[in-house]
Image (cartoon, rainbow, N blue to C red):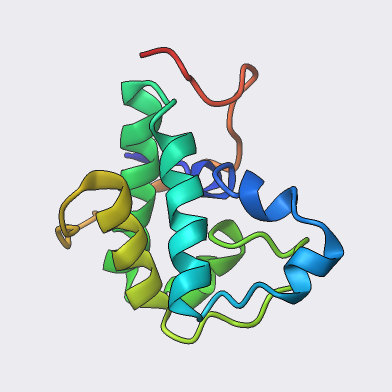
Length: 129
């Protein structure tokens, strides 16, 4: 099974487009700031085609099921943006999944032949409905 962690990262246009002043006022652990971020991420997610949506959700499920989201955290939150450390990484991932999918994630068993794909692909995210 292939897991595309970079698909999560692609939904952070909201943060990447913020001015320095806006970023100074953005606190990722604050509920209202996070709600705005997740709303923007959901808006991006809703433009994705079915395969891309599945890849995002599978990546989040993989991170939650891994038991060690810290190991893969660089794929989750863009490090090019100066942010506070996310205090509850599993809680963050569960809340993001719920926002995107409309239901709680299921913890799955990912067998040992998982291949982490470190690319979006030559054509970017599929936004065809």
